[in-house]
Length: 479
Ligand code: GLU
Image 1 (cartoon, rainbow, N blue to C red):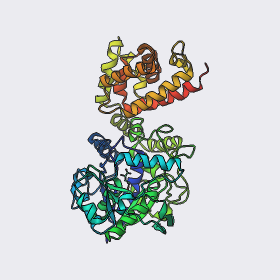
Image 2 (cartoon, protein in one colour; image 1 turned 180 degrees about the vertical axis):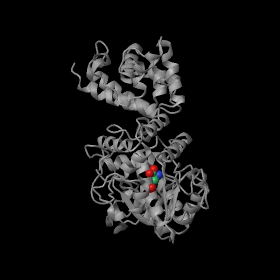
Image 3 (tube, rainbow, N blue to C red; image 1 turned 90 degrees about the horizontal axis):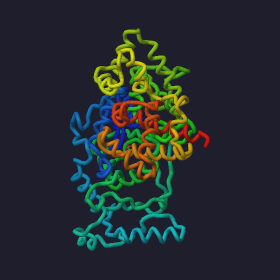
């Protein structure tokens, strides 16, 4: 059977470096084996999924230079490739499991579940569903099928659940530790587990290559495969990317959005090369290689499970090697493809022309539109409004970073201004105070073009990084 692999991102945020990382390993394996690489959008979380995020994920994967053979934009023989368009398929499959006695309808109300949780908490028991509705007779449950209910997986209650991870060997889990997972929610939409297993089977996925964090879900998936009477694919869980302190990579410690790397001028080929170094080696001490070379030398035996550190210094060093391979003219072409293109320059020019008398004033005025991290040494005092402490500013900026993270919709001046005003009020700061702090954060200057338009042009990834960097700096400031 020919190899078929997939990535299955959930479109609930910005394109994540982890998505490109997992995509890269799936892609290399598929190309090496002459198989197919599929992109499936897992948008079953109706409240958090957006089309905007889906589009951004597709664009970011295209930016790094990975292409897929089947997907929501391309179609293919196993579509649709967007889970929100497959609801009927999951419902049918939930019914199939019920008919086979592997799943059951659960009519417990939210109140009962909350009470149960409270009782379990007080008795210091493991939290989870107690299986009340599992005891209902099939006829009784079928007769109530018109009432609001969820469908739960009937997990084995005793014994061991074992599955083989191709990198780790057999992994064993205690069945008693597993809850009767919800498969279909009251609104008829599936949870991740059901949709993921049904789709991997129907799309004939042979190898599930995904991040380590899904290991704990896999026993449930294996029970699902057995419940359907299907053969499970092979499982390969890639080591998690880590922050410098070895914790799981997180936006609080490390930019995780691919957009940040694009906007700070990491070349897409560097990005792929760097991700290829995460837990994998092409052999010897060799660190610089192309995608074609990675495919050529690809094998899972070359993966090591120690937590790969996403080290920004190393990424910049590697990018430098790639830049030095370019002729000056090629480098200019790359600069133009980055932020020195007409569209971006025009946006910057539009903002600073009010403040210019001669053309030679342009470049000295616009450095922060082309920089990643800023040097705040000269303006550090202006970060802190009168009467506030470095600690106040650090806390305010950390909270503002969260606000920016959760801002929905386009990252544009008016929306940012509304956010800024509401945030100042929440904080109990004068808008003037907050806006000056933010101006310094964004520009490392005390005078600049209108703040929120400046932020719009800088883009959300750069803005968020600056807010977090400045928060750290403020935290270190005395007073
Ligand atoms: N939707 C899951 C995610 O967001 C997919 C995990 C998997 O590959 O099974 O990563």
